[in-house]
Image 1 (cartoon, helix red, strand yellow):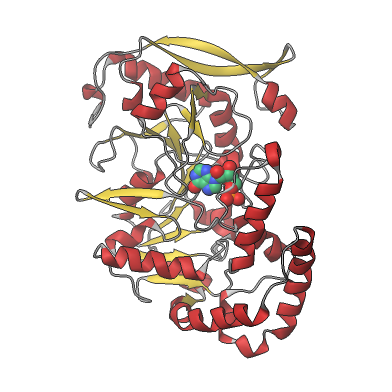
Image 2 (cartoon, rainbow, N blue to C red):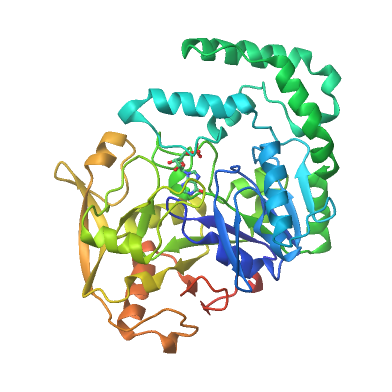
Length: 429
Ligand code: IMP
């Protein structure tokens, strides 16, 4: 297994950025394979904080970075993010960053539609990032998308624009919005094409060649398994498949390419946006987790909802995603609690469940069954070996492993990359 696929095993924001950066140093290629600039990955390298939402994390260290076909790309955001990182001294060129020619583009009217729908949904809103992710994926599956390769054929765009505008203008009319200004769209695409096209490549080819050479490929998932459009808390999910299996299809490699699947798991649970969250704590404990864990969204700045660790959900994520081992993050946020709780099952109207039932109403009514574990008073922040951890913290980790039926490969004890306990090196497998 020369490759590693990193995915979030909860609702996103598990601390993937640090782990990906830690692994990226030893990877030859880092690949994003789904999602878009809805992701928020924070890396701290040499005391500098980098916030990425679209670019693969490897770019900060100059590792070859690839945006695969499974990603939806906002070309203007891409340009801004490249400029922002350049201002922090990161060199990004078509030599170290490739974009799949087949990536669908996120256009301004996708963002409009995302916001219009959310505003019109009242209590039923998903709480999206309003970045046009969902509408862009809809157009991809509806076979109407404008893709990166179309930027080299803008004189032939009229028939595609006809179909796209016919679809969107009908939707916009329903919201009382003016039709799309086609000239403005084409002018915008002409203006951005020269910036994007040098990065456009047949990345499936680059990656297959890398694989044949035996290069180490690191796949960087975005969001988390519980936001997967098939396996997540539908409809309160994102619009892509966030499971590890997407690494192959979203980049142009076969299913065996995923290699070691590393699920990133926070030592408690958080969620941004709406939707069921059985172990949510709307009390002083939830508040304390949020404050100690600095739980604010990287992309939207929204306050994250916080709750106890839910072993049922992570066991389910590990199963549907084929997780080989987990990286447990933010353990230090649990320091100083007299006791901790772990959810080991649910009841819905008195009926027991050892998995999350699929219907949103059952999910919303699921009452957690908790197991209580004694806490620890010592600090775990900055621990770099098991010997640095209090016995109770080790007990907590061992119980998590048992309940989710998956071993710990790494424990992260602070945002600093070296504050990590390595149990099993994913690249060494
Ligand atoms: P969308 O991906 O913008 O369509 O948002 C759909 C749902 O996914 C919302 O609940 C968002 O808050 C959530 N979401 C999207 N990206 C992320 C992420 O990177 N971390 C956590 N939640 C996310």
